[in-house]
Image (cartoon, rainbow, N blue to C red):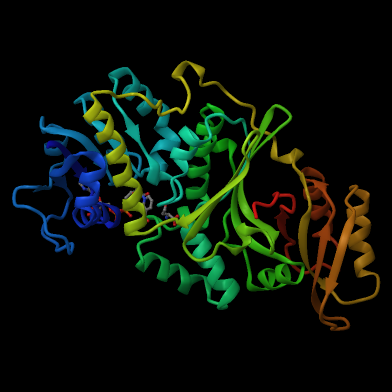
Length: 439
Ligand code: NDP
Ligand code: HSE
């Protein structure tokens, strides 16, 4: 039976999971592939620590170059993370004629085109299923399953850590810091968890999805990015009263020859399947012009789900090796010379409904002052909630608007914050109530 040697760089959460999947599922993988996958070398800075997986003698090294330069190795798996040494390792591996598998969304969203071009030039494969959605096969879906479609929209819950935090805050009333610590202990969070809670990781993943869906190379700076750090239990409670759940959504929408590209906390109808995706689960709802809406859901982070995606990539590449082919699937998801710029829609022109929460003095005329400013900016009100009564004191006042233009809303908020009845910054959360159903 043919033997395909692989090398791994980085034996942290995901790297250890890869070793486990390859060991625990060796028989089924061998039967499906018709070849045997062998971990010939594996590098990490620490090769003394017990990772709970049996590793054959002579496999471990602290020098990644020993993996890259091993002439028996056909596939190098990069699981170090970050955009510096990881990039160097991948480019060197391609230079050395190895196919590459990576889970590194931070790297691909910034240096993807350079890496992909090198792979194409060398006639090698780069696979990156684990870079978006953990164990969910969404990259394969965009590169293959939906290749007959023009992609109209993508709505994704694609950061497991922030979904875990929001779910715990929604259902168990957990405190932000405590829940984040738990997510870190479970191996869900990035090395710098600010990437998770500030929406940066979701923006990296959205960039990858946009590039595959629209055959482009979007700049991260063009993706509007807002995280979940300012979401309070009060907003979660009011969202429920209005029939919504708050999710960190990554959105790409094709509109009028441009693409909306944004990541932000979003109120979604409580009845939509995306609202039901809780914990570290991810979900990606894609609308293709031929297929209509499809939705994929599964564990979006953690050792074994992520390793599932990485090893599936290794199997895919190995199938090519068995057949003596490579480069069947362009890493760009289109012919490299078909990659072209797309216009990203200016956020200021966005037109959607908004949730606004004010801390206002409870006195006659307060609401009319606020609604007067909104009206002056052509923003009409759908509903209002004021729960408490504290004559002369401060109370939360919540307004849901009809569709309003983002720039006009920003001007209105600036004016409202200057009113003498307003005691704090206005909280604004965008609403997506036209996602289309997939049930
Ligand atoms: P970890 O930090 O757990 O693992 C990275 C490992 O690489 C560490 O053991 C690290 O050692 C080692 N390393 C760092 N530099 C080198 C080097 N120069 N040579 C050899 N080894 C090195 O990260 P994860 O496993 O969580 O993530 C790996 C990648 O997968 C990242 O790109 C991440 O974004 C991505 N990913 C992670 C998911 C998850 O759920 N964790 C899900 C999807 C993608 P040290 O600890 O000493 O730095
Ligand atoms: N930190 C990431 C998350 C890992 O929480 O989604 C998976 O990409």
